[in-house]
Amino acid sequence: MDCSTLQKNRYDYVPKTPALLKGHLGDLAPVKGEETEAFSNRTVIKQTFPRTYGKPLVTFAPGSSDLGKDPGNIGVVLSGGQAPGGHNVIAGLYDSLKKAEGESKLYGFLGGPAGILGEKVIELTEKYVDQYRNTGGFDIIGSGRTKIETEEQFQRCLEVCKKLNISSLVIIGGDDSNTNAALLAEFLETRNAGITVVGVPKTIDGDMRNEDIEMSFGFDTATKVYAELIGNICRDAASARKYWHFIKLMGRSASHICLECALQTRPNIALISEEVEAENWSLNDIVRSIVNTVIQRSENGENFGIVLVPEGLIEYIPEMKALISELNNLLAEHAVYYNTLRSFEDQTEWVNKNLSRDTSYTFSSLPTDIQRQLLMDRDPHGNVQVSRIETENLLIDMVTSKLLELKTEGKFSGAFATQHHFFGYEGRSAFPSNFDADYGYCLGCTAYLLSAGTFNGYTCMIKNLAGSREEWVPGGVPIVSMMNLERRKGKVKPVIRKAMVDLNKKPFKFYAKQRSQWAVTTSYLSPGAIQYFGPPEVCDLPGETMQLEYEERKAAP
Image 1: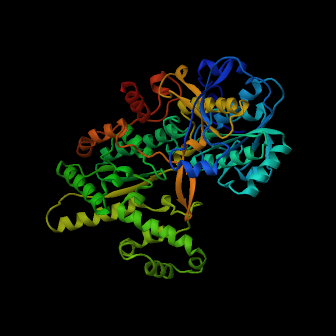
Image 2 (image 1 turned 180 degrees about the horizontal axis):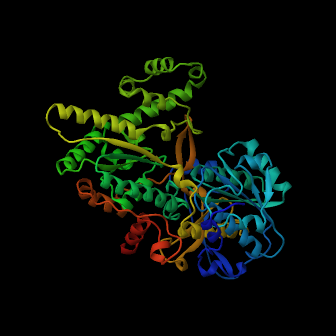
Image 3 (image 1 turned 30 degrees about the vertical axis):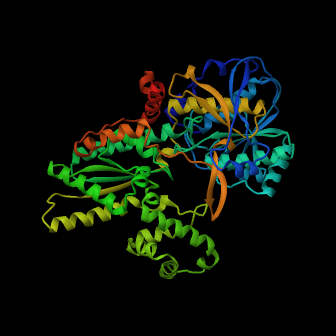
């Protein structure tokens, strides 16, 4: 395999782990905590998961156990979008399996969950795994978005695992993938299959987290990549002094990426979807706020600036949220007929006839390009694909129109030229930061421990992530305990609850306290590229969000 000089050097990096993950696995024992409950809607969720509901939290601590004995073959699959650190999850899983007694094998299913159904599988060997250690991407076995959620698919998984003598299946994925892992775990337990299903929390969005899962792997690297790019643009803006840059950042629902990048770079404006929803800000409210900042900076002779826009913002603006919700339900209920409408004109005419009066007005008032984007193919859940909606351009158009109006009234005499950007795929397969390389590897070791301990229906957790590696504590949390009910494709289903930005927590409060100053003054920070070699304070620390949350927990009574 051809590789860069950096990649050759990264092969030699040894992930830092707590001491208890370095020794003999038989010297570790599971410590069970209290039984858990679902996040909400407990009665319905318990009915859906009668065999796997109420399991206890588990951590691993020094003690004698059978975790070092032959656990049987393990299968692993990468599910969903890429996230830096995934290769190290597999490396940690592989190394732990090979430390155990016996001749167990690690099988990798190719191309995501579809690889299980199609029995497309390879044995992962030391030579093969070594080519991918500490590197980005999911190309070691590939990924995919096929969902395993039907009785027939569950049965097929059982057949394939039995054929390969697999005793545990590790599913590395986000909230949807882990939800499907929980469904499969329940199915296998009702069949007394003797097969354990273990999840690993993965998503750069940072929204698969709670009191037990402090962060999904990939978030640290992705936000540092985006922050570097934003910092470069900040420096360019301050140099050229002639452009307002509107930068949309990946994050399907939550604004964790946007907030973290704001904390790292200090833009003039960072919109937080959760605040927009909480304050009930309309699209015009948002535009008016941006316009006011543009005018203030212009009066200071600074006709340039940086605006960060979360990908999912449009779904949190009240009138847009109502429109999108109606559209999703309308297109789901009348999908067959709607697909017969070939022209955009026919589609918009039909949509406007079937929307309620207020939402029809909102839809008609939008630029044609935005209307087209709202009517594009839905995602696998039947929802609008917000990444395709150019929210940054919508804001640019509306701010420009308002400033032109004010200029004709003699209320604005500055300049307003713009550039737009969308940072998403740039961060998904980057070389993992030292933090994500370490975290991913420890998650892989933990996936082995949960597999060997037959903790079916659990996802991996590592506690104390903001502390030193020696303070990290591996364990597992029952997937069902993270669930609530949500509407998907017009039906209410149990799914893992997405974690949104908490407006009452220190990360947002810190940003809210600083933003009025950052808005008017040019206070940009340029964090620079991810550093892999050097002092720990430069190379190993997690991002601002996690450090602020850690400080808040330490200060709590």
